[in-house]
Length: 185
Length: 168
Image (cartoon, rainbow over all chains, first blue to last red; front, side, top):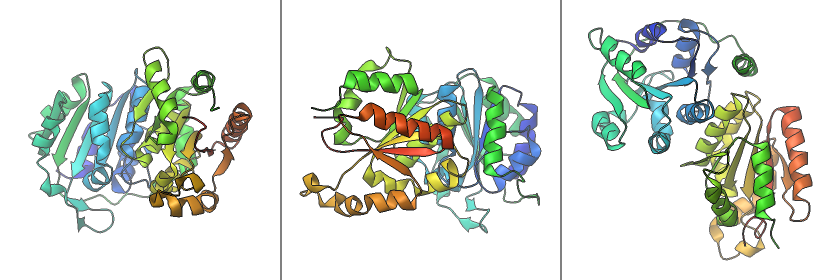
């Protein structure tokens, strides 16, 4: 499956209590177009979505926070995965869409394939983790488990490259922040 | 005499919901005090692996109307340029950053701080960051001025912390 096909699937799982942090480039664009609005659409700040999700999670224990990030972005802030594993907020979900590429900038290769994600995630002592290829036959079970099991979860999908042509996010970042802040009264 | 940590931490607890950062020896006593308060205080304290991660954690707090304080050495300012310009300042989010002022005369034997010490103020100015000195005698006034600016502009503000101010 391609990244946007996985993101489309998330529609079935997300409700009013869900907050999403999407990483820059295509992922933020796909989250903006395909999922309920408003969410935290990061436009820059490579390497930081997991940290933003962690801050949201510890400050809002009654909400469920899902970070959606690519592999290039994850690698740039790799220490944040360890920070999350240390603090283990039970309302944080991290979805990694791994095409082993900096896809938004033209498909340059990342070094992600050097990691055995199953072994790496296992070493963090997280109860709920999985690393698998996203396919129509695996995606339902793995997303069920990811969203419906309480506690910190990290789901790593290897995905096929490919995107839908989507228009740029029309909101300026100040508007993104304003609209998102309105969700907190 | 350094700042009274009981009063200082009380002020932080009153004005902030979350603290995150990367340590400096200039914060040693303050951070010990903060650690001892854990469980007693409502304040959440998260230790970060990098300074930009601390800014990201503070951003998560700010995006849900919570107030965040970040601490770091000025060496870490070299690590937060993108976090500020493409996140905090771009989305106009308030937060306060305590930065230890390394590379002054007392760091003469620590050349790793010398260049950042020299460019400290011009770098903060290039980054469009408003900054104040945290003064032992006037710290409450300094903090209040910075807090007012932070809230009025909805932007990050900086307090520079010299040796002996928050740790012996």
